Length: 102
Image (cartoon, rainbow, N blue to C red; front, side, top):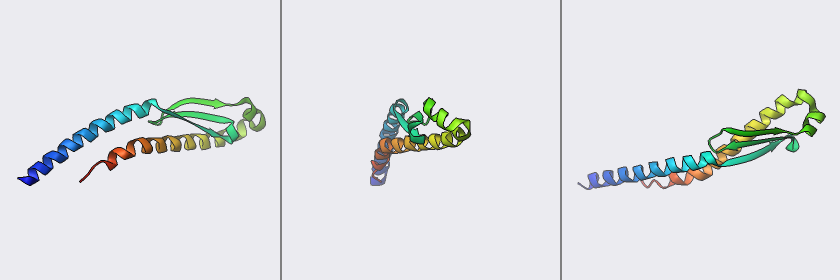
């Protein structure tokens, strides 16, 4: 009978954790993080659920680099912005998974 109580307790805890996780994911989708590349010549804003909100390429970057370097630097900028967004998500959602006491 104790096993059934333990199982019921775990299920209740999982349901509560699921609700908290959904709530945290919704909040995270509203948060943004800004990353820079090419010495600040490219600025990207990404949401916590990895959606690009804004891209800015400064005129100074384009004047100094032209289109030849743009593709390479954009790739770096996107990868950095997405990594920053994943780290933010891990910071926000990680504690929820640590709360499981099984």
